[in-house]
Image (cartoon, rainbow, N blue to C red; front, side, top):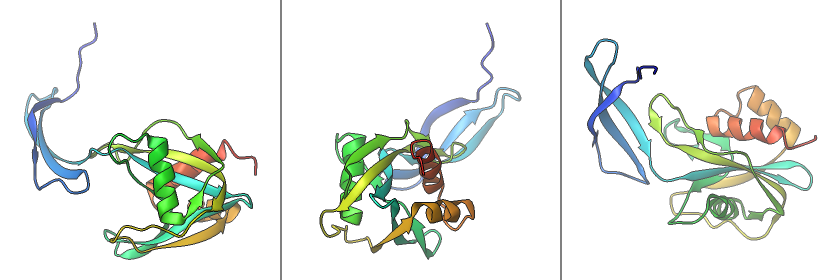
Length: 186
């Protein structure tokens, strides 16, 4: 039988601050198999499951968002999404967040596979991408008090160009776009 050479966690992760929005920064000690030494690793935990949506209108326009991102200190073009509330399904989460942030409703929902990891080297958690087709405006946005979001419709081919030229920079946006391509015949 093959020997497991994975680092072994020692004790429980130590929280470095109070959990906020289901996220925490933790320190975890691991014993390293090759040297038998221990080392601390800084990890970012995301416990709440989340969804991200690439939504298209009947005219094949991506329903994207212009939103200020504090870590980057600038407004960025992104896709709608957010965290699950209570025990709602991931599809219900995607539908709710999409409707609240954009005011649009899909005719068809296509899950784009299982959980995609944010950054496996230091972030514990991920998101679930969805493709929404034939979306129609159903209501005004219903934003949280902390959200300042402008809806921007972008023709799909231009969206793909923006992604490929790194104009759209977030990993979840790139992943959702790439996974959606196999379902679209454009």
